[in-house]
Length: 135
Image (tube, rainbow, N blue to C red; front, side, top):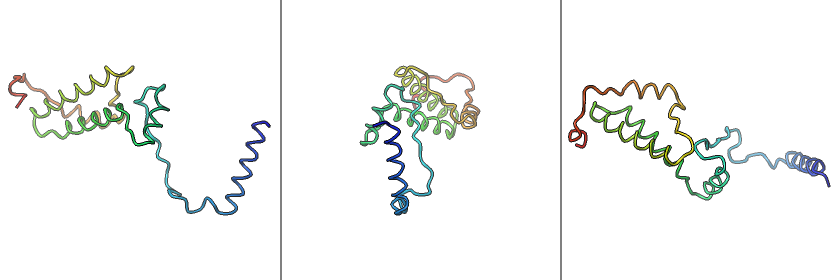
């Protein structure tokens, strides 16, 4: 049997099921599909990670990205200069650690407007004594 024949059989069965109303009232009907962003996962590991994710395991790359985005958000909301400096150092360490584990650097500029807001809020005036920054 050729694949074309299988495709026709499958198409006919789908049409019959639609005629019987078997596709009505399905969970999520009328809602947009949610596509998972796995751009941070190396291409050769995506299928394995998808299987793990479907079984409830979250890949470390996804956890890292989430931690980095949270740190960037906290940096944007830092109340004073010393706190911004501390949060900026933490963000830098997180990004450096993630980049060391990957074949390509992390791109924080997925949302360019957000990235520009974060960068514009970071001001370092003068030097910061190491003992002051550890408080």
